[in-house]
Image (cartoon, rainbow, N blue to C red):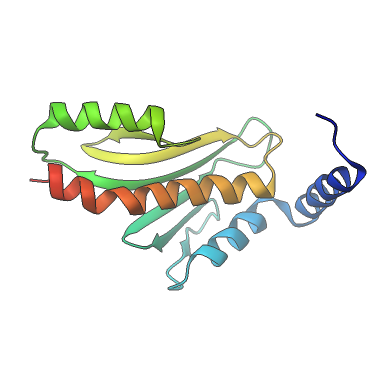
Amino acid sequence: MELTSEATLSIQDEEQIFNDIGIVETIQTVISSMDSDSTAVVNQTGDTWKFRYGTVEVIVNITGTTPTDTFTVLSTVLRAPYKDETGLMRLLLEKNLTETFEARFAMQDDQVLVVSSRSVEDLSPSEIARIIGIVAAIADSHDEVLKAEFGA
């Protein structure tokens, strides 16, 4: 597939805008556009943001702005204790294959999360928006269903 000059120009424009404003400002802009209730907060070091999206809290973190740093988005959808933990694990593994795009269900500290993580290298504004949007939407659409079926 060959890119047209119009498509190339828009990619170049996106990269220039990103280079001009930086990753932190881009993340803040994306969060502001999704945070309809104005719940977003940022920690004092400016590398972690939290905001409400529907019925879930979404956390966005960057470890820095160098190519080896990491951009991570996560949201808790269920907390222990669980009913039918085996059934829950099977369901989450099946959903990881068919429903989660660049995100995935995971467990940490007795919590079921939706998470996506990638290096900062070559991260574009559209990828930032897509990853935050995917994690937020999946978490918001699954938290109440999982709580109803598997929550204690």
